[in-house]
Length: 129
Image (cartoon, rainbow, N blue to C red; front, side):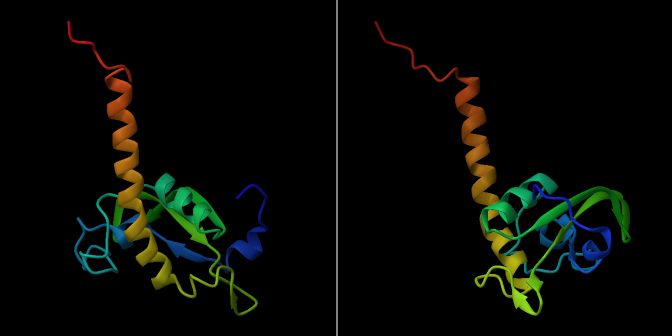
């Protein structure tokens, strides 16, 4: 989100920690989705990219820590509803957003892995003689 958000308004936004959608975490450790719907080790930057793609306003707070595990730092604040109406009609609740993130982040991770592999190979194919 390019524009600055008023800190008082930001307090009203929903909080989303990466562990909420992390398939490697247990429910006791903070996972809020079934393992089948969650993704593996999501990062704050991936959450931000998917929120931008879904047209859901998102502000990252990298210095904040998760209360159940203080070693996990960073959270995202997302605006799901404004004046009682969803910002994006396809995402009416925080649970819908978490399910979408769990669906789209693995695709983003695969895309990045493919890009890294092509960079390592130099993007050129060797000719056989």
